[in-house]
Every structure is written in structure tokens, then in C-alpha cells.
Image 1: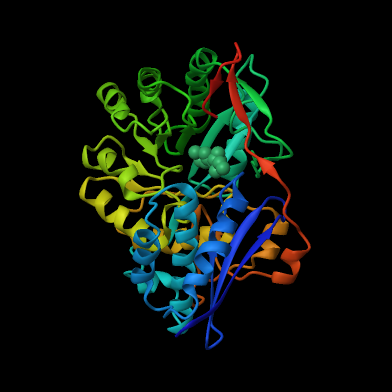
Image 2 (image 1 turned 180 degrees about the vertical axis):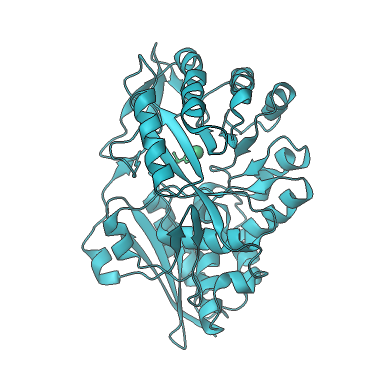
Length: 402
Ligand code: EZ4
Ligand code: CO
């Protein structure tokens, strides 16, 4: 089952996506998402210029060997660009194998461990009342879990507060917008938001919150502690995770469950967090962490330490990545929850897919492989548009994590 061709597609049906298509000699092809928000073309070039020539002629069924060949063979290891490129190849090869065997991927990686996968949606508002109304809309759509974000009084723009109701898209065409940040104002406000949410929705609804890497460990510990009465499903990215030891401080002070990992790329980025049981959910992304093969190893390590999965599923990951995540989620034993930000209608049309949402749960469907296709002709009508994520500055102008 020789690989005869591999092509990279860059398109912008509402936002940019990079997609790898690997073709085999018998005409079976597989897709992999390679989108790295704001740095898309670096991955496209890594694939086209450096990986595609290495794939031609290889046996598409040797998924693990090709993974190791691309990882060890590059000499330069890890990093989001490299791991997104490897992740795209890995996903495409699983897609090919599933199609060749006429089987959905989840059946190749252990079969279903559950009937369907619980997902959470993103609710946001400019005021606490607006956020409450947005959460209500998700509850009405059947969601059992909702992430709640709100603009902070006195700050002109806040992470997670979008323009539409269901879609939140932080990347902006053109150069990166600058947004102001104050940890003091944020910390003073968030507990009251969750007081209001629990008053409105009672205790059964799963509520999540994303700090988006903005607090110091001790500030994050304080926030976790103050939110304990509201028993969050998780508090996400409380502090930047380059320093894994930081999480000891948070852990020492609060029982609020901690989730982290959307910017991680390999098992080494999370091994200490997992082995020391400093986190509760590992949120690594299929595309940015070496694909389904590597994510399964991470899940296996996490399972030993009571850490569950919560794969990143933002709109800047294409339907190809979401499908891969759903096959992974359905099969691993220690699945926790899946992030589900709905894509725009244009995106859904460019990537027709078999996955479904019903009453707060998703299922990858039973089409062979991933169950996602790429409408190449439609994709070509949406050319790449340069776009960046915003940057953050404190009120005095100091650069801060976004
Ligand atoms: O900001 O994926 O939990 N979800 C998130 C995302 C990230 C984007 C960055 O590209 O934090 O919305
Ligand atoms: Co996040």
C-alpha cells in the first residue's frame, strides 16, 4: 500500500485551515489537519518542503514506524510546527488504514469504551447577565457542560468574549490586535460570575472556566480556592505551563480540578504534571501533539495517575481534527470531556463530516476511517488570509501572556 502522493491544502472558509491529503497507489486517501493558528504557513512549508518527499514510496500501513521516522529522523525534536506536521501525517495514515479495512478508526484503536462523548460548549457575554443568557442557550441546545467566560468590568476586551453567539474566533485578519489585561480586576470579578451562574442553574450543570495562562501560580491558587463552592468541572490553563513545578503551588491550595495542555506538543510537556498528579485533565490537541498515535500514549500515561482527557477542540482545529479527537475520545478508557466549538457553515461545507451532536454528546459516526472529507474545489474558493491571535498588555503597557 505505497504512498504515491501527498498534497497540502491551505484554505480560509471563515478562518485558515491547513490540510494534508496522502494518496496511496490503490486510490485510497487519508486526511490530516495541520492547522497552527497564526503560524499556518510554517507547517504547510514543513510538510510540503520537508516531509512530502520522505513519504513517497513508503507503506502507508506502517503508521508507528513512519511516526518514529519523522520524529527521530528530523534530529530536531518537539515544537508545535514539527509536531503538527507529524500529527497531520499520523491522522491521515489512520484515515487510510480505516478506509482500507472498511472500519471507523475508533474500532482500530480498542473499540468504543462508551456510547458517546460528552462535550462542552463556549458561552460568553459582555456582562454577567449576558453570560448567564449564553449558558442558557447551550442548556437549551442540550449541553450538559458549558464553559463560561465574561468581559471583565474596566477592560476593553477579554479572552473568550466573542462577537457571535455560538462561534468564538480570536484570530483577526491583518496584524495582531492588542488587548489590555489586569489580573487584579479579573480576580476581583470572576467569583461573582460563578455565584450568579450557580444561583441560576443549580448544581447539576457542569461549569468550566478558562484562565488562558494569565495568572501567577499563587493568583491561580487564590482563584481556584474562591471557586471551590461552585465545584467547577475544571479550571483551565490557570498559569503558563512551561514551568510544570508551578502547578504544585496551585495543587497545595485548592481542590478545584485543573486542566492544562492545549499548547503542549509531546508527552514530555506533561509527564511531570501527570506523574506527580498535579492536574486532573490533560487537554492536548490531536493535531499539535503528534496525532492519534502519540495522544494515545499520553492517555495511557494519564490513566495510571487518575488524569482524564479533555482534548482541545477550538474552531482553529478543522473538522478533520475534531473527527480524530472523537475517535480517540470514544475509545480511550480515561476520557473526560471533549471541547466542541461549532465551526462556521462554510467550514462545515468544505469538510463534509459524519460526526454528530445529540443531547450534549457527540459520536464520530461509522464511516470508514475518520469520516471526514475535503471538498477540494470549494476549498479553493476560500484562499488563505493572513491572520494572527491577539496579544495582551497589562494596563501599564507590559507584555503579558494572551
Ligand atoms: O484560544 O485555540 O480552550 N480553548 C482555547 C482556544 C484557544 C485557541 C488559540 O488558537 O483556549 O480558544
Ligand atoms: Co483554552
